[in-house]
Image (tube, rainbow, N blue to C red; front, side):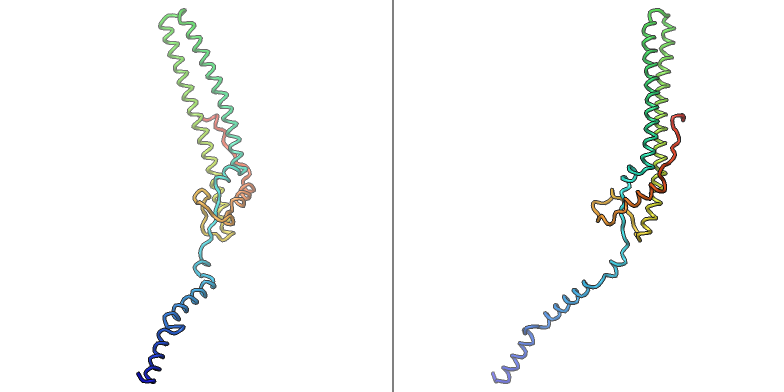
Length: 205
């Protein structure tokens, strides 16, 4: 091989396998470009909606309005339970009286009294079921008003913080504490709705 051919072959080899061949130069350029993009703010991330978290169960338990509702209805339940206990005592006494008079009255009279006592038992049972149903409905309806107020306040607080989506704490596994606006919602709810009226259910049938 002549000297000129050897130099031509050497230059060709350096072009293919030199310190920075074309393929490696292209890969290096892509890597540097990707690092450059990483250092730049992402338009899609910047435009992503802010998500907020609210612990609705905590608010429903700790808010002044919710605690007031529970306190009032608990007082109604205690009063109702006392009434039921008095009625049950009256029925037990009537049953004992019926047992004692069995030997002193006619069979037909005893049957009539027994039937009347059974009707009283049935009436008390119906009364108990109706009162409990009324209490439960009163609680559910009143707490629904509290929940409606919470939703309104959540919307206001979320708007103030620029949040586009609000999820409940019970729907997620984990979230950054900075996304949690429960305390702010609770504070504003206590200010706007410190108490709520509950219709006394014990007079309803």
